[in-house]
Amino acid sequence: MTTLDSTVIDTPVGPLSVLTGPDGAVRAAGFTAEPAGLVPLMHPSLRGELRDRTELGLVTTAVRAYLDGDLTSIDPVPVAQHTDGIFLAHAWQVLRDVKPGEPVTYTGFAELAGRPAAVRAAAAACARNAAALFVPCHRVLRTDGTLGGYRWGLDVKKWLLGHEGRVTAS
Image (spheres, rainbow, N blue to C red):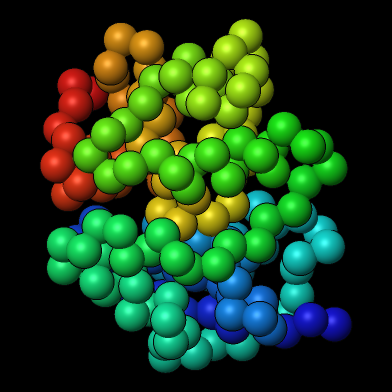
């Protein structure tokens, strides 16, 4: 069985748990103190036994730099997500190209992903994203500019957007 390294990083909005595979790629991340709670969010082919680490090298360094204001430091961190659908994988990659401080609407995200009529599929890509922060689904808003949903809570989403220079209506 695969071993996944896990760590919990303190942030201003609470703990951020991160799981990485043997290659160092982020397989899951979320604003929780319980790394094991992230495992069910991952595709079964990416799951494994957790091994606690105090830090995860490049990943921990990138998160700390992001929290210190280098908002693009998380961009080069490799992410490994898997899905049985082609659109989701593409949509997750498109999300990684949404710049900090420049959130898009679900409609805009669907357009960026090449399927302007697939607004619900774009929303599903956000909902099924297991690598929060690194695949920045927090940068997707409702058409009216309000926050919409976020697995880790609207207070976290609002903080992330504010940290990135964009405060929105709740």
